[in-house]
Amino acid sequence: MAFDIVCLRPEKDFLQVGITPPTVPSITYRAPDDPELKTLLADAKAVVIPAVGPKLSPDLFEGSSVKLVQVTGAGVDRLDGAAMKRLGIAVANVAGGSNTALAEYTVSLALVLMRRFAWADAEIKKGNYVDFRKQMISENLTGLEDMTVGVIGLGSIGLAVATAFHRMGSKIVYHDPALKDPTDADQISALALPLEDVLKLSDVVTLHVPLIPETEGLIGDTQLSSMKPGSILIHAARGGVVDEMALAQHLTTGHIGGAAVDVYSSEPPEADNPLFSLNGDAAQRVIFTPHIAGVTRQAWAKLFQVAWDNVERVLAGNDPINRV
Image (cartoon, rainbow, N blue to C red):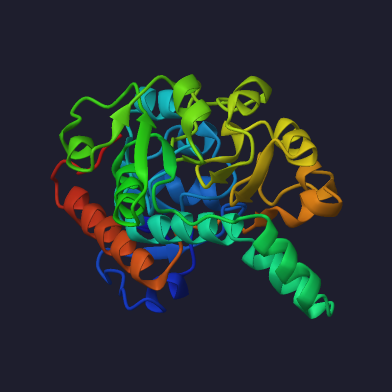
């Protein structure tokens, strides 16, 4: 049986956040490793995919009727953009749907790391209330007010994150050579600087760039070495942006004061990921989350509704919005 739409995420994902996929045209829900996938795509007009997951081979789309691949998020690195262009298949994402969720995550994790909340929780559970409280006070822990936050990538997500920090009283510096209009940045008194200067000046560095050739390995040993001693790194972009071995080394030496890691060079991450081998204090200064910085019920509802609206738009003969 032929289907108009092949969706590579379960129907329940949509239903549990209150979004009902269209009943017409016809939809089939499949896993990305379904052996029938290439056959199904041969007759499909649209494919809906999550932003996170294994890369999809261009071979799946060769000779297909697919007009649109709709990503239900911002990242499109699961797809070979050049191959999609060659095949005449439009690729669209949903920009901005996770802005609030990402801003909440980034500010929250920065505070948890700067004020040692997770470490304190672990120590109190071990019965070390008195001594660890003394340690926390002696460290003269700081909040976000008057701290400098460096935002790498000031797209819609980066701007939302920067705005959230600005409202907490932080000073904002940023690096984004692709930014064409600094008007929004000017509204929060954000200062554009070269990457090296952002890293040197910032108490918190937060990454919000896509994984493209220009950003792969963007933050390596050289960049981490140039960061302010004791500063915090929030990594909720894409795994390949940061050299994980270098980050582990700088956490071990204490040069990097703490890190929140939401994305990994491979997902699920390998058991031998160097960040998982940290010991002692270094292990207490890193927090891991499973690529959920942008995942909330509210964010998913926005993303899914825009995605389905765009699919229906294209199947009705119109051009897609948010084409990348």
